[in-house]
Image (tube, rainbow, N blue to C red; front, side, top):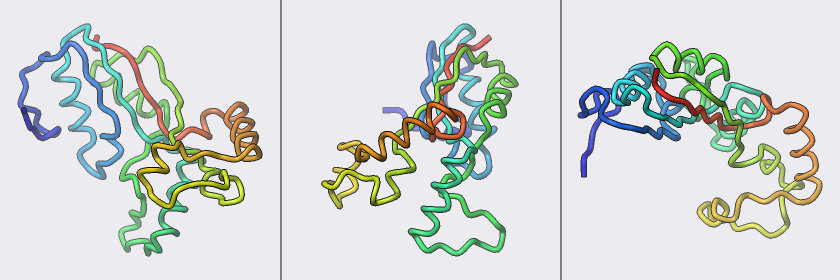
Length: 171
């Protein structure tokens, strides 16, 4: 197995026909641009990509506040308080990708856990205390939670998603 640092990948330029990078860039406080550049460098011209980020929107800001509260974290003096190190606007990250020669054909708005699951009265009554079981079970909402989540997601899709997936190819 090959191991490498995304800041300096051990592959030659254009080494891959396709690249998938999920859950990567938003975990860098600094250096995410280098990671994006390296991803683009290793993709051959005409190669396909799919990458995900955490969006800077209402749902993710709510989640950040929730996680900080749950962990009772004090905001550091440098002001950096995010659970996810970097969040990006939808168009902001599209432009970042395009500057590296990656043409975005589509942006999918997705959700892995509804922010409404954070509110106990909107959860299904039966749920595990075990995180891995909750993940595999889908963090289910009750009927009121599903209704509310469906309405806000339909009316405000850019504000109520917690993953953006960019799909395209290298120019």
